Image (cartoon, rainbow, N blue to C red; front, side, top):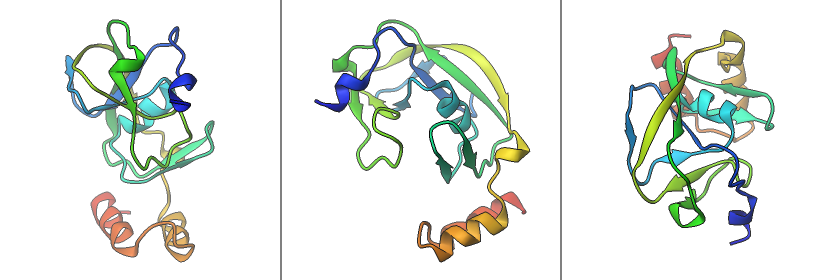
Length: 141
């Protein structure tokens, strides 16, 4: 219940996706942080950040950020289990919502994790090598 108190009822809720959508299904992830939705519009496998600066793996170069239409109450959301995001940044919705497209996004190359950064994450035990190998293969780094 403590984390539910971190939501701001007067702030919009966002969802990022590489797909064009009109509705968002129950169980989907939402945030009140536009930048997080923008990053997730590229469907990254890995996201690292400090709340203001983010890096990720892509792979989609184009994406879309949506705003949920209608009020979102505490009964409509739940904490994402085992989230690695900061508390209050990532939620699942419990019911379907209509969406309004508010932005088309493109990847900022400076935000992409480099091959070297990914390898360093493996050395530090932050990510498994097989995941990095798959990312590097998909991204053709």
